[in-house]
Image 1 (cartoon, one colour):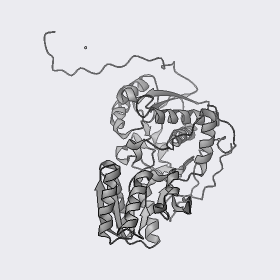
Image 2 (cartoon, rainbow, N blue to C red):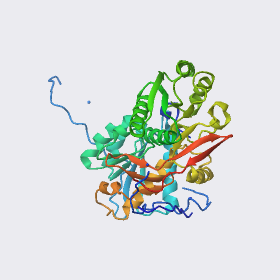
Image 3 (cartoon, one colour):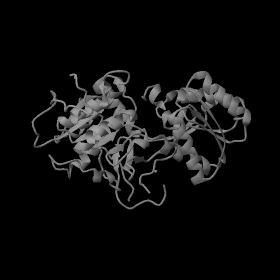
Image 4 (cartoon, rainbow, N blue to C red):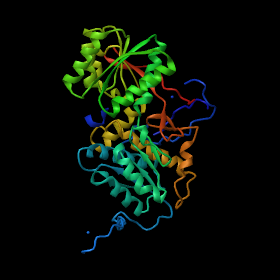
Length: 406
């Protein structure tokens, strides 16, 4: 595939519970799914007596206020995100971003309706299907995917989830989130090419930590190097400090992966610099993207991590703020790009027909605010990531994101 020249002519982070692609390229162009207004500096608006043992089927919900007569010119798309509860602000940011995408592209062939998963992801999905939606954007949380899938699969309605958990992907659930495994792999490869040989890791207990551990081991198996030591910790200030002290007392490594957000990574790096980790290359994950506090911590000088490029995000963020009065969560770009992706496929998608999921496997890939991406056969978005370094009070790109895929 030929290198893609990005020209978009006109246009943070999850809370603590959610913190936590280069040679041999093909020869086809990336399919352009950019939006017209992103780079133009414009202001964006956007229940007897007898007990029966026969299972009682769950009643089909009545059509809601969102149910409309069949639309002959527009595809009905459901946005399933939390609009109440602890993650409501994130859900609202995703909803705002989808509105921006519709306005920026002047899309006339999509109708997007929002459903609140905080009141029950399964119920929200059933209502969305009953209302006639043929594609689901969401859910946000991996834990909600099974319920959404159970409601949508019988109706052949696929979902493009905003989760970063690759394990929830399936033939009818596509993972659009930025998965940590890809970030770790890109960073480890860069560190190996720079000379790091013996790796250590600080890993939080739970799913994210285990995924980071597996990704590190798999990357070292592919690119060489040794996993010399690792320590696990419960997420908390004193726990990661203790784990860093234990790891620092061991030594014998020249690179350390800290698989956590910026705040805890800074605390751990400070301890490592005082112990046996002095002089070791600090490595991070995609959780560090957009974290300005990294530049103010001396212990983070020289640290490396990989993430999607922020070049378009800055423009997106400015436009979002002009329209909605606040800065967006970093994850909001997934809502925007999900709409761009849908619009790209809608070119060949007849209204009233099932969503053509086969088109998501376009080997040419797609392009959005977060750069180039494509879906692998496992249903996970493979992304073009750049390597960044904390250097002299700034975060600079030291290896650009590839413009093509393997």
